[in-house]
Image (cartoon, rainbow over the protein chains, first blue to last red):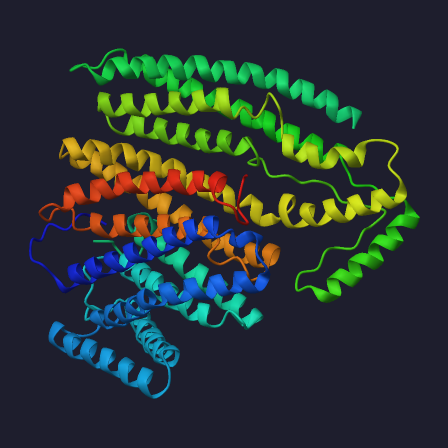
Length: 205
Length: 344
């Protein structure tokens, strides 16, 4: 993956900037959690107090995860849709999430976002594997596209897996699928030229 | 136990030579590096490369000695119980297993449990970490003919060996925590009751910590990532002063490999944590700092894609330096913050 030479500000750039800000905010919450844990001596407290601490931290980080999931929800269809349609889709997703949150709960709204993202990302992965040129990727190259699709699929599955942490067996099975998808995706993405040389057939651009 | 006492003596004597060799070689490379850092033209470049190769060879020899020592622990220190005690122990283990999601293997008199300890625990983790850095510094040295970059790589190696020599020598007092834990077991005159109690204390830790197969993957992948982050830190520092694509490319290549190792290492720690600690470890300080480091590293890799935009070259360089600071913070947090990962 080379540095972009274009100076034109793209949709991708702003999405990456927004993701960066959210990741930074999550980092700040993490640092707060560390100091709180030490000074409140959470480790010396009863399990019920520990559970309360974990719940409180989950509440603090939840809004940023909501934004991250929404960003993911917008990020995924950008491969399939042109920019104008993507704006409509983003607006629709935010409104739908708001309505579902109001009618049912935030958790269900997020689950809907994740399931929609998962379905779309699976379509993107199949199209990338088939070598479709209609997909809109910032990067050229077959293995980079397949790798990027796998990494994003892994990320969606990981967040979905967090919702299922009480279902022990399913949680672990999904976790290993997540790990496989992410690791394979990173390998294809970072070492696309080597993979292309190794497997042959397709030339990486 | 007597056999292992002799092995410890051999280990310490051999280790003394390894550490002295490392100190001499890295000091020479670091000293040459310091001179080269302030010179316009490179001085004694070939010999400094040879010094780095020699340091790597000494590191490898020391690592082989550590592996040999761990093999001696495996063969010499089984947790042996007499037949009548083992029956009672197996009853206890069965009772524990019936209430737990992860079972402890029952005691087999014919094959008593043995310590199969990974070669990166206690002070050995620093040795492994700095050895990884040494290999990567060598790769960096021969990849780019930039004498100042090489100089900084050499100086950092010397700093790490200095820390290893004076603060974390794995050879002078081998595995003090491990031997502190198991020495009561191998001392004579322990009553059967105390022996059973000791076994029930040592055995779960042996299974879920020392012998856990995750220990063979989770820590070394993270140390490999730490070594890569150190190289990226050096290249990011250079990027602040010079807009040189070769250095940026080298930093990015190490960052990619480091991120790959870090993500894989963190992911492999997850099922292990569930097995060893149960579900109540989220928001542990070390987990928080690791997530923070990973988030920063992800940000660095994303911004680097746009490094040609105005200001992004410097922003991504600063992030590369911040990743290093986050790595140090994450590692040091294990000593300062309490929790499941603490070294306190």
